[in-house]
Length: 319
Length: 319
Image 1 (cartoon, chains in turn orange, brown):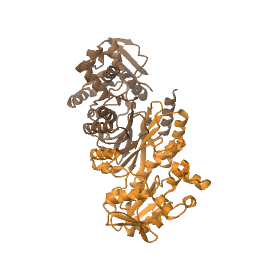
Image 2 (cartoon, helix red, strand yellow):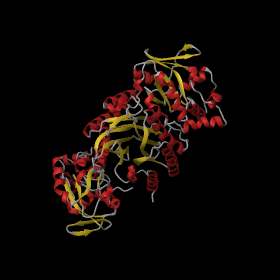
Image 3 (spheres, chains in turn cyan, blue):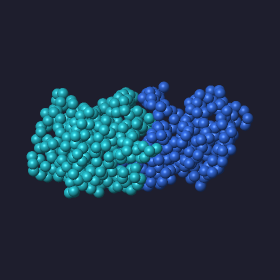
């Protein structure tokens, strides 16, 4: 067990309130004045969560987007955010605020408060944001624990784009042209379709956002729900730019299924809700794809072209 | 105008929601499900907000205490907190969690969620915490803007202890023995009497916590309320250890009035509420002291031994 795993385990012992959901979900859920308040907090650190030469506006955008995605995955409508800024160079900080303003408007998360702090010379940039949302009425915010055998496994949007964009930015994948630009933008400016989560919430059992990779996140969802999942690699939704750069081979689909930073929704729902789910996706301008089913067995099973295939050694970003 | 002031001014433009209170108050106030939700977020950075050799448990304690103090100053009862941890050495991190657990219990702020992040090698430690509380029922959480001419100016607890403790830790003030230990502990483990704020809220007009220095914080309160304040330096509440180390001269009182990190309450209230306020302080185990009055004039006026004295050049920690 790594020291980080041990630390998080110690944190879980500390977070014994039911509102904390055992620190196993995308967000905390607190009942206040009869409303379900959904709370999430993320920190991004230079050279860890973003590249030192990423545009400041994009770093701010990403900070807001990842938190907005967590709220959406719990079916919550955005209320606002608090954010803590580590002061650095004026020009960079000013550009950061531009991106923050744009993202707060886009994701309907007005800035409510926070803190600005001076950093010692040479410290890496780091920023924290807490986002608040109001959960669905009359139904608990969908947790990772709520998948049931017989459910269909769904994903919204396309997967793998951001991961491939990062590869292009890092130079480990060669690509140019508008498609490559679009893929890089998916890494720097994730675009979660946040109205989708609240609209889907009444029709789903379990829901979460895909941040570390579809396979690793689905395996976490299955474990949390004490069920298994079988999904079909042929059903992976790939974007045209992804297909143009990486192809559509089994390896390309597997790579997409293990890539991080997608910020799309992964959810399970009873089969009878299929037409509602498809209608909602259409109405919010999104696309959803059925990937497979939830079963009584434990763990994740993967099929491709009609036969079972082994799981890759790394399902995504794991810690 | 410093670049930091310009940055904070740009942030204020961004925080146009009424819930943000213009980023001029200790906390944001958001109405959710009929309840007043009070929200505050603070970040502490090594070598900026705490000393590199401060015990890890005390750093965690301080992080929770300063946020709990902000909630109390808005009359809010604690609901919980989210916190972001920058991972460092295992032993230090484990000790930090001990202090965090102790402080979360003491201040009734259960851990609800947050984030843990890896930091690049050599980065200073930094930690952010967002605390949530439920504001008083039937009355808006007391803001800095609500002082009215004729109000009495009050402070809870004693002032200057933490600042003097820091001087002793830094070696700029020589002192030893139990009194010096107590003063150092006031810097490292602030002890805001948090039940006092919610109990006082129905009886006060303006309220805030003293974090940057009594004089500078009172001048901010007066400016925010568009009033002036006259206070008596002879009324400064000094602790016995403070008096034993620094004395009780005019200079010693002025030093206490400009010291930071007190985390006591500063509030104004109509004269007819005096007996209620004294009774509440007694019931919650605290002490309150009347320092002066709010007037129609602008700015701060200081008296000592019956005569007006000039304000010091620096009223406290200003940014």
